[in-house]
Length: 252
Image 1 (cartoon, rainbow, N blue to C red):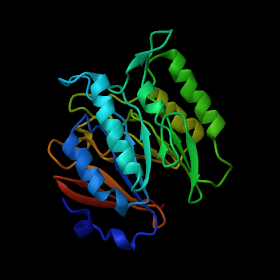
Image 2 (cartoon, one colour):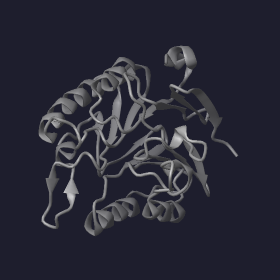
Image 3 (cartoon, one colour):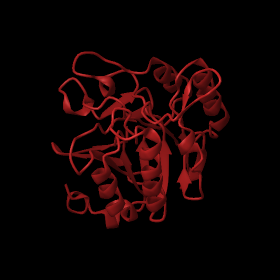
């Protein structure tokens, strides 16, 4: 897949590239590194590491940290944690991606942050592992809610209920997230977690929940991740995968 061939990046005035569930696939990190300079922001929606991998999580984190620093030299990088990214358990026993929070930088935005860019607010939510961290995410959303009329984008690893969470056997969406979407009505939610949902007939890479557009790019094996490319000024989005390219408008 060649994004420059599929969609002319150099004519997009506000470009956002989104991937999720890389699971320590270093060739896919390399693919992103080769294209990061072509977008205004690169967003990674959790599960950068792989708990099932052969390498210790701490070793994986060191390698991925180097990639994130490299990427942030090319563009703004926005990263949320997923269920595979925890390297620490707090006093309540809940998993935390401490390594990621410690990486916060001028062009690298991580769990717990909200940033205003190009007239939008982007909120980066950590993976919650229990009632304590779930309550923290809720408080983060309450505190980050923008003024009326300001588009709000969430980066949140789990997919909401519906086709973005179709596993091939069941819908495994995060009901808490669905409730927050109904409550706060963000403009866009960028998720992942359910790898094959976009590739199944009952699944999808795009969904509409009330006034909210929700997305899951899915995960594919190989050197090229499945990704979403947004033109936020034109309100257009395209999904790029081994299945080809699909495009939608975000109006109406």
